[in-house]
Length: 66
Picture 1 (cartoon, one colour):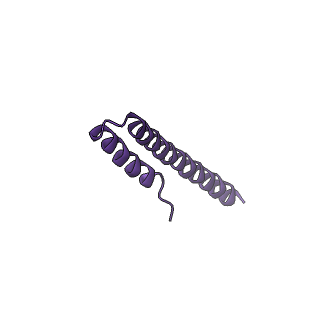
Picture 2: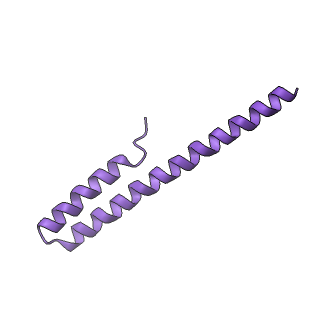
Picture 3: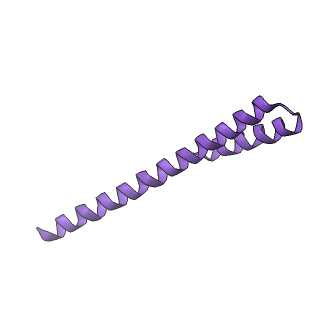
């Protein structure tokens, strides 16, 4: 099972909040970057799933025409 970006988003949020609480702007920025990576993985996975769904539908149509 892939985490689909969830782990990066959680890790990033922890870093962001910790950086905010300790006034560590570098850690806060790392957290925001990690959250962005997580979101990007999530979107990429959604696109992959949609492409697989379309591919399956096309295959089904061609199989029914034979």
